[in-house]
Amino acid sequence: MPELPELEVVRDVLQARVGGRVVERVTLSGRGGPIVARDLTGGSFAETLSGAQIGTIQRRGKFMVFDLLPATDLHLVVNPKLTGRFQLALPGAKKAGPVHVTLHFGDPEEELRYVDQKRMGQLYLTTDLAKVPTYSDMGPDALDISQEEFVARLRRFRGEIKGVLAREKLVAGIGNAYADEILWVARIHPYRKRTELTSEEIEALYAAMRETLLDSIDEVREAMGEDVHLKPRDFFAVHMRGGESCPRCGGKVSEITARGKITNFCRSCQPGGLIRGM
Ligand SMILES: [Zn+2]
Image (cartoon, rainbow, N blue to C red):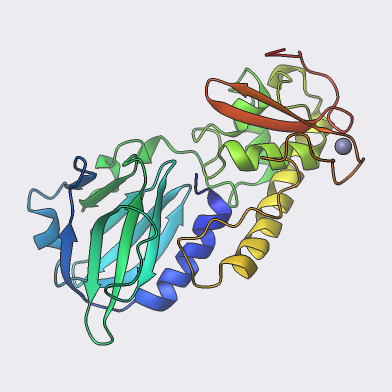
């Protein structure tokens, strides 16, 4: 569920709060089955991570990459998938959900927890990012790609534009929720085929992608503060707002569920497309 805007703000907060701090020890809690916390360097996850200092933290697509010092090439890579999130807390503070991995810091005492309701996320320690599953498959980050490159890459993908936009191989960082928001801003029906979009529409899509992501980062930053476990989405125009009024035209926001994923859009602002699931 966390997508680019949330993870971008989480990155900034974590960099400020735990960047430079030394991990005193690591706790793995395997209640209900083990989370994927794997040490690809061949050691034990908790041992390799203990004693390391957190260096630069980067977000790439929906991955978070922590550089670990004093090594020059050791990273903690977190792929929170649909349900993972971080929590910064004092020891003993209320858990934001089932905690699977805890990084304990010393004076002042604080914890960075990895919380995951459904144990879908993955954490890796590695000196080689290419060894992290799906990491190398990612296309350019959605905030880094130029319009020219976006247009060129898009040509390789067919199918419905919403699904295409959420493909990490096209651009990294956009999932089910922000794809709905971006398409609403671009006024493009989510189920239209990529191959039927005009070049004007594709340009509008690129502009909407940047605008939506950048505006959302501001909204998330405002609402999240330093509570990195929160997932502020009150500002969404259509996603999860089925049946409500479209903020642009006042029409009713449609909702279609397919393959377990909800799609919301406005039929008047985003015309066309096959009417599916009805
Ligand atoms: Zn509308």
